[in-house]
Length: 534
Image (cartoon, rainbow, N blue to C red; front, top):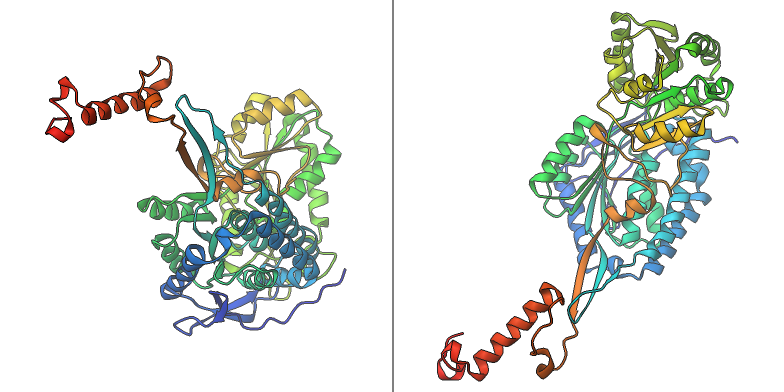
């Protein structure tokens, strides 16, 4: 497969189905992380542009056709999105690789295909948005409806722009919502391309709106805007707390997919030959910029030294380089600040007594933001590099002696997004998976993800779920409808039966009170027509 580095035209905001400049006319540079050079610019939106986007989404939801479009027709549109994504797969992959620095082979085979499959999956899910009927002890018919929540504010990070926007867009659109999207300020290009594809597929004007610019400025404006009904956020735990707090002031529902620091446990009965591949994949995939990556390796002491030896030989052989080279497995970091952050963590590890087994430094290549995949041993569990999220191609390795110790170490950080284990003991796999503090657990491999499988965090890794039918629930609200089936008046006013439930007693008592008031009852002082009291 040969995908060329693309030429990108300057980007605009997408609001109400039209492309426009920011109100301020300001622009923002977009940098190719593999070279450090500016490749294009996008509009620098501000609060006024967010307000315009929310107004367009609000109008589209309140008066437009999408929320009232039959689910089967919405499903057809989503399926057309998937078809168009596949038709333009090379173009989309090239834009994502240029923007993020990820190897084009992964952008094409993982990111783009995941986007297509996700829209296909929610095309089917859109047609299963059924309510339920409920049996009541009173003469009434009760049922529930699942309705769209309204205007969704989607805030997405820099590391998987395509996938993590689609994991919000697809279920939100399937349910009939409208969207205002704020992509990461560093990696906005695929968001603009997808806005074009969604419109071409038949998503009506105003249903999807995209504003690019400063994360703090636009995020604050979006979360606090009263026209936003729900926030769907993926990003760091620190920023997630701020967003959740601001949304909470207006009692807006929020889903939060936040940071991670996943443990990867290798038990003594693991097939180490197979495990090594999963270990390396878990910490170098997407250059370690993966919230569900596996940067903490916990190895049974009997395999510890052997594992370190294999990693010392194998990790330097992983191809690092130009993301547009089909042979590349590890590309650059997404930006200079991310590279500097990794350097700080590795320096802290050395200061805490850690030993660099392999890597541990920048890689000079074409002016890009490259860091050599790094393995560190000898750190205590309370070391900062073990406890905090590094978000780079760095693996710490710790030994353990017992299953209980492995579980305790695995659960010892504030995070709980993902976890994994390597074992040939099926009972142990189930037993340990049940005890790990994580939203998803992988056994004998890593990053086995599918649109049908939900993922999300516990502890400081957030709440709510992305993917699966569970995600669709987050973009709907339940309304109950109860319709009286009461009998004619002469029957309905008879003495209520014991056992009919409180609702039945209320109906009967109220009916008798009405009888007494209208017809006249000695206990009420006469009929209502004669001035009696109820």
